[in-house]
Length: 117
Length: 115
Image (cartoon, rainbow over all chains, first blue to last red; front, side, top):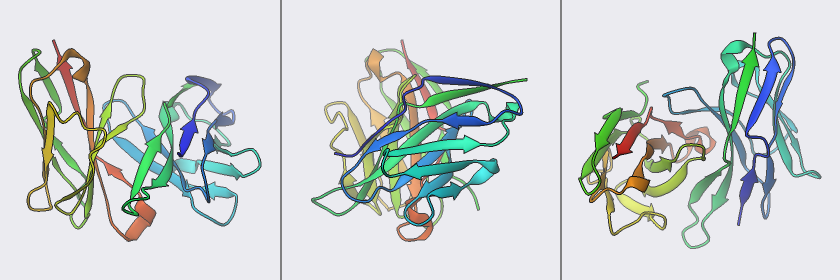
C-alpha cells in the first residue's frame, strides 16, 4: 500500500532563511505526490504536485518541491521564509483502488512550520 | 468560483447525541470526500462519492456514521450517537474528474467537540 511519512512534527526557521519540510514516500509504480498547507481554522489548500517530468516542481506562494526517486523523497522548499508561511503542511500520495480504478489520497501526519521574525 | 462550503463551522454536543454536517462542493465537481482530522493527525478519508454513488466507505464507522449525496451535489454526514472519540474536524473536499490532475479543494471544516 502507498504511504507517506513526515519525520518532523515541527520545523522552526528564521524569517528570510531557506526552509525545508521533509516527506518520504512508499509506492508501487510511479508516484503522484502532493503538498497541501493548512492555516489555522481553515481547510487544506493545494500547493503543488508531482506527476511526471522535471524533478523540481514549482507551486503557489514561492514554494517548490524536489522529487528524488532514489531517496523516495519529496521535500518542500522555499528559498526565503516569511512569517506568514507559518502553518501546518501535509504531504500526500495518490493511490489507486484495484477494485474500482478510482483514486484515493493518503496524507502524512503533518509538519508544523514556525517562521520566527 | 465559489469554494467548498461547509456548515456549521463549530458544534458542541454531549456524547450519545446526534449531529449532522453539510457540504456543498464546487460546482461541476463530481467527486466529494469526507475526511476526519483528529488533532495532531492528517486527514483520514471517511467516505468518497462520485456523483451520487459511494466509491469507498471502508473507513466509515457504519454503526454510527452515515452519509448521503442524493442528487449528486451537496452532501450530509451524520453521527448518531456520538462518542467522545468523534471529537475532530470534519473536512469536506471536492475534485473534478478530469481537470486539475485530481487536485482536491477543501472546505474550512466543522470542528466537533463531544463532551
